[in-house]
Length: 160
Image (tube, rainbow, N blue to C red; front, side):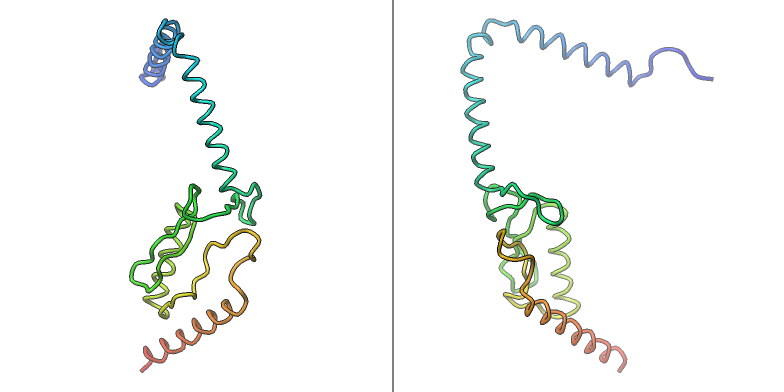
């Protein structure tokens, strides 16, 4: 049987909403806010314009094949930054921050430790828009051959 009355969640939600509405009504009618409102609004508009200009400097306005908006630069004000790969000779790889960064840095590091050592210039990560859709073909085929030969060497060592 269900109890009648207010649940704790509904009570807290309604109380918080009523309190927020009461404080907004009091705050918005204060004379101090009315006199400084014009200056705050102007500063807010200027900040919005600055953010819009900065976004135009970084973003291309077109989506990549994986659905993210492409960026023109790395290590700027966008989401693509050069990240170090611990334990490798790489100076870092430019990747999108977040989950992509975690997965790709981990993948490169594990490949370096467990399959074959990675040398500088062998890892192709972020590229500026319009420069191609990934690694040049010779780099990709070289990487496949190196991975296959490393796997063969590893299998020989474990079978002996």
